Image 1 (cartoon, rainbow, N blue to C red):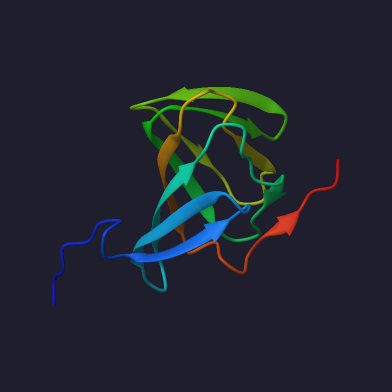
Image 2 (cartoon, rainbow, N blue to C red; image 1 turned 120 degrees about the vertical axis):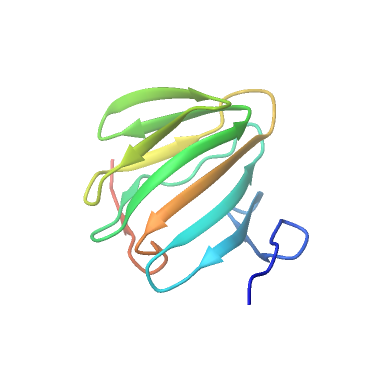
Length: 116
């Protein structure tokens, strides 16, 4: 059965103590998550052994370190991150960052932290 999904009815979780995620799609082969990242929040540097990801900015600005290359992404922009590629997302702006994180296969349980 098809179901219209949004942050109003999707499974919610928090990460990094202040960030929100909503599972818009969660299957064995695909994960689509909408995330809300407040100003100053960031994730830890990590990589995924199997999952590849696409980060797409809906609102705000993201700073994404992809294997040492610093990318600035604005609303309407995205970037693909291959498996085994260290990356870290930060919101260094003064506004809330809203984005989609699309992973195939799903990245939960497939994360290795990178020490700096």
